[in-house]
Structures are given as structure tokens and as C-alpha cells.
Image 1 (cartoon, rainbow, N blue to C red):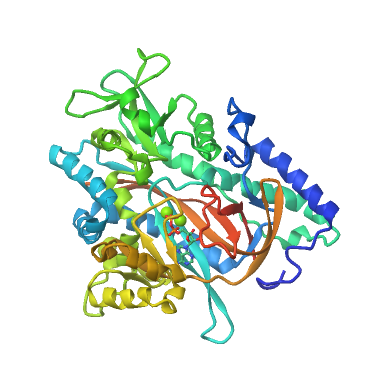
Image 2: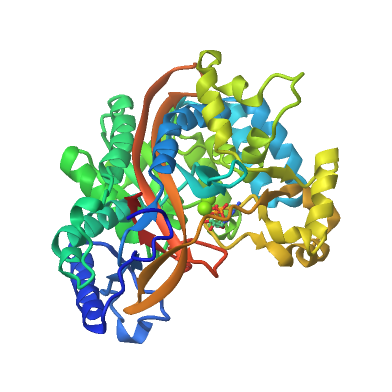
Length: 517
Ligand code: ADP
Ligand code: MG
Ligand code: MG
């Protein structure tokens, strides 16, 4: 395969070949847990009253071509990104400053910050902090120097509930399986030796992060067995993605109890010991006499306002934060992952001022700082600073706005405002709230084609790929100590090129893997 737009890739398929490939993928996905719970629009509740059905996760029929140097670039910066975000989350003054710039129009961020303030006042009893991060990128094509060069540009950095590590591991395996068993049989056969499919250790990598944190927590002074909690949303459809991490932990740490707890049940099934340490205790719902001490709380919930319908939900988050369990993430680490922080980090400083990145990444690593900077694209504040006023002008002009995406401080997909919709949106909200958004240049990756299998149907056409690199980090909030800093595999998500958003769970995108070109 030569070049990204190779006309021969993916190979054109006959109807019979498409059907055969689809059937193969259907069975492989079910057999290996590359599955999600069906949305009600696909299988009606009446048709599955006991909730036993699972369906294939949407997936591409072929791995998408992805520039080798871009893949290497994204992997190469991950442990520096881990270090950067660990350092940002330790820098309370910096986070307070960025929070202050957005709180006026953002009650959610304000509530999170208030929780941190309250726990700080009584004193944190756990200084270890766990991050399971995912840094997301798209390929940017630079034609300014004649022949095009490719670089990855960061879309965002996730510090809470970074999902799809479970399913992406299996997507890489699916495409590997197809490349050995099926693609060589096609009329337009792809010679397997021309396909370079990188390995993906997302499940073992992410599970190792959780396991490391578990072992860093001391034996229970209260005489309980220590456990791990996955804090999840009620009715989560992406449950197998999470289960795969749990199953891996059950294999590598078989003696460690692990429980799934709905965010809305925190107060029902946990309590805090009346001790100076404030241990978090989990009471087994089916047998409340059985109590465990929680060493690690892994949040796959709590990242958006939907999980906080009332004050009781905020109290529950406070309850977790003030406990001595190791949180993944703490409130501070969650706040380090806002788009506002990303904007501040990506904004070049005047030459006369010290680099913002240098404040967080050790001075000795100047070359690493330069590598991080290469992944930034232009992001602007929407405040009343000179740069902010300039950004407001662009955002309010229907023509200029076409090159941008407007982002609030939210996670989980479906929250951004794109292109021509930006001016009217801004005018619909109070001007005093504009500060709580950032304006980001759209990255326009080179065109790629693929076929997407979604709900049994095959969609064919131009696609846009977003690669996510996982990283795990365990650090001490009080000292400079980093105990664990690792790369943990990757995710490739692909969406139709007419769609703005790419979230698989949100129903826009699909699972994919990289074929390096
Ligand atoms: P979230 O935290 O909700 O996932 P993102 O910043 O990742 O928010 O935006 C959601 C989606 O919007 C991305 O997955 C991507 O498809 C698209 N997107 C966001 N920023 C950009 C950008 N600068 N250029 C192109 N697409 C973008
Ligand atoms: Mg995203
Ligand atoms: Mg996000």
C-alpha cells in the first residue's frame, strides 16, 4: 500500500464477500466480547425484558491506514504527557487559576472545585493518585514545505473515565485475525505481509496501572480485606469494555476482590471509618456483614453533570474524595483534564516569559517539552484578554467560524459546537459565560476510506480517524515522586467524514485499528 489515499484500499468487495466478512466479524465479536449492550432503538426493551442481549460494537471491516511516523510520534510523547498531567494535578495554584477563568458560567466545574476545597480544609488522607489517561490525536497534513508531511495534533487529553481500552484491545485482535484468515482470500486479496498491524496492550496495560495502585495501598489496619471498586453509571451500555479490565485483574491478581458500584449507590453501600485515616469501607450488598476496605476507586462515572442530578450525588462524590482510597482520578486530576487547561498549556508564551510546560516537565527534559509542543494545535481563550477578544471575533463571524470548534468544559461527547453553528450559539448564551469555553482550530486529516459495520449494516465511504494513546501513572501529590509511568496501548476510533463527533458510546463513531503506512 503506498500513500494514504491508495485507491486499492480498502479492496472493493463483491456482495458475497461482504456478507461473508460481516458474518465472520459478527461471530468473532460475540465470541471475544467485542460487544456493547444494545441501545433501545436497536433492540426494544419489550424484546429483551431480562436484559440479556449484547450486540457487536460498531467496527470497521478493515484496519484504517495510519501514517507510521504519526503513530510513533503519539506513542513517543505519552510518558511525558503522563508526567505533565501528574505535575499539573499537583499544582493547585495553577488549577485554581484555570478554574477561576471558567467558573462564572460553569456550575459543574465550580462544584468540583468546592469539593476539593472542602477536603483540603479537613486534610487529604491519601497522597497517592492514579491516572489512567488517554491522549487523543488526529493526523494533520502540512503541505507548506512542498511535499506533504504528517504530524499528529492533539484533540484532547482525558484524565477521567478514559474508555475503550477493553474494546480496542479486541479490535486490534479482530483485524489481526481477519488479516491472517480472511483478507488473503478476497478476490482483490491483500497480501498479509504488506499489512503492518501494531500490537496493542491496552487491557494488560490499564489493568497493570490499577494493580500497581492496589499494591501501593497498605494492608488494612482495621482487619478487613482490601478491594478495588469500579464506580460505574446505571445502565452503562459500554459495560464489556470495563469488564475486560476486571477480567484481566481477576487473572493477574486473583485474590483481589473487585466490585462494580453504581455512582448513585455510593452512600448506600459504602461508609467512611470513624478514624483519622477515613478509610472507605464497602459493604457487600448481598451480604452486608461482609465489609472490605477500598484501596482503589476507578471512576467510569462522575465525569459529567448527568451523574449529579441532586445534592446527594455531589455529597457522594465528596464522600469518595475525602476517603483514604486511591482515586482514579482525584477531583484535582479531573480538573487538570479540562479543555481550559489544555488551552493554557498549548498557548505559546511570549519569548520573554518562562515556558508553561517547563513549569511542569523537568527542565532537564527540554527536548521532551519540544516534542509535546509539536502535538499542539491552535487553541484560544474566549475571555476578554487580547487573544480572547480576537477569538470572539472569529467565533462570531459565520465565515471565519467554519475553521473552528467551540468547546465547553465537558467530557463524554456531544457537547461541542462546530463551525457555522458557533455564532448563533454564542448569541444564545449570556456573554458573561463565554469565558467558560475555548475555541479550537479544526484538524482536517487527509481523506481515508473504509467500511463500517454498525447494527448489521455496512456503511461505505470517507472516514476520519482519531487515535488515542493510553498512559498509566501513579504519583504522590505531596512530593515529586512518580512510582509508575507507562504507555498502555492505543485506540483508533473512526467516524464518517460527514459527522462532527466521533464518540463510539455516543453513537457517532466506531472501533478501528491502525494499519501503518
Ligand atoms: P469529549 O471530551 O467530549 O470527547 P473532544 O474534545 O474529544 O470532547 O471532542 C469530541 C469530538 O469532536 C472528537 O472526538 C473529534 O471527533 C471532534 N473534535 C474535537 N476537537 C476537534 C478538532 N480540533 N478538530 C477536529 N475534530 C475535533
Ligand atoms: Mg474526546
Ligand atoms: Mg474527553
